[in-house]
Length: 226
Image (cartoon, rainbow, N blue to C red; front, side, top):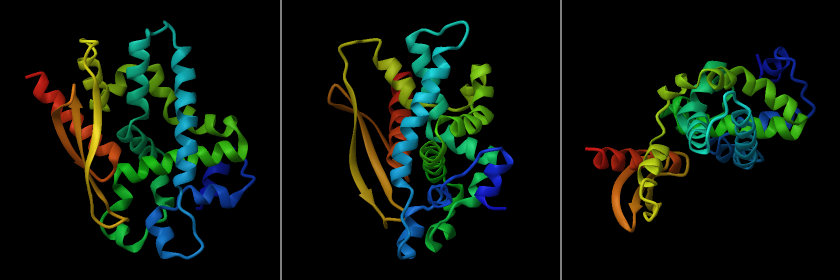
């Protein structure tokens, strides 16, 4: 089965096959195949589409949530671990195109790669068929969590938890700094610090900046709540 077959089974009409297939091309694959373009530009588009879709659906939840709860729920629904979970539920990882090195090092199961691919697919679907195509995918995997927000707690978003903890004192400022990037382009490792009022409170490592930030936030949060 191809990704086009998969989409057609969900009654999603594809106008531009090349665009949809491009969403599954990881940079490691593009580097090994001349003329292929990776999915990073589509990921940029998909991130915006995902933010709008989740914000609108959370806004209309009944009973209405206050701003803080809306922010926390959205962060949990669209965090890296959640997006990777949706990919696995849908079985989309089988369509991912990886370079040989990334394939050998388990790239097909890396949350960061799966999350980026999912955002790229949403971006491609939006450009190809508008929000109606996006709705069919997100309704399938995200709406069940919107109807039962307590289920989302299985996806731990330490950046949001840390932000909420720090915001109890409005004078405190929180930000993240990239302090190290090592490894080859197809398998980088990032190290991030999280600072509160200029003081380093936590450090985290990951295969993406998002993952490193989450791990830094976890490190800081666990120290602060001891």
